[in-house]
Length: 200
Image (cartoon, rainbow, N blue to C red; front, side, top):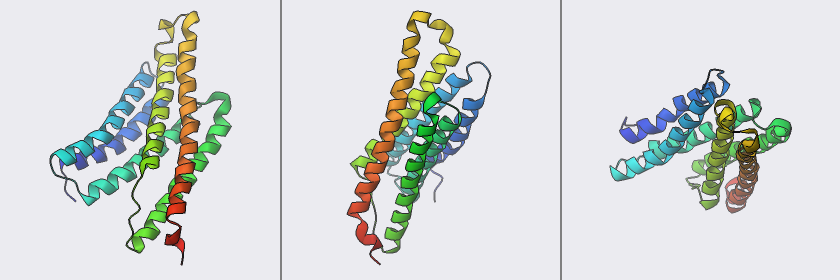
């Protein structure tokens, strides 16, 4: 492993995750705003590390592996924090069930990849997996944004404009459940294509 800039950017998302979750639970003014923008920085870094690696010809096995692992850790960690932080209101129980389905899929896919690797087979991410990740990141962003507007800028919205905050919240909720469906369906797609890995 080389401590080059792309790998450092990749690894930096781990402390960012802890910082975002800590800010989600903080009660001081503008903590929700800080959580939202720290998440945006983390999400951008997910694209930036790959761009740096390709541009500087520093693409590595470690970088590809850790990028995928840290993406999963960040997304799942933030989803757990969202459910535990009451970001879904009356839908918390359904959100928890959706999260369990997402966790089952992700651990199942990790197991499938390990089985495939033991046989010299590489299970590459496909378009459905990338769309799933895109939906997950957007869901997290909209939900954090709704909490930011409510907690830190609620006074700026008159009573007639509260629907804006509500709309942002429900867009996030909708994307969250959409991402859960995409996560499960993409997992089924992977399983169908690589069923032969479990033949023995």
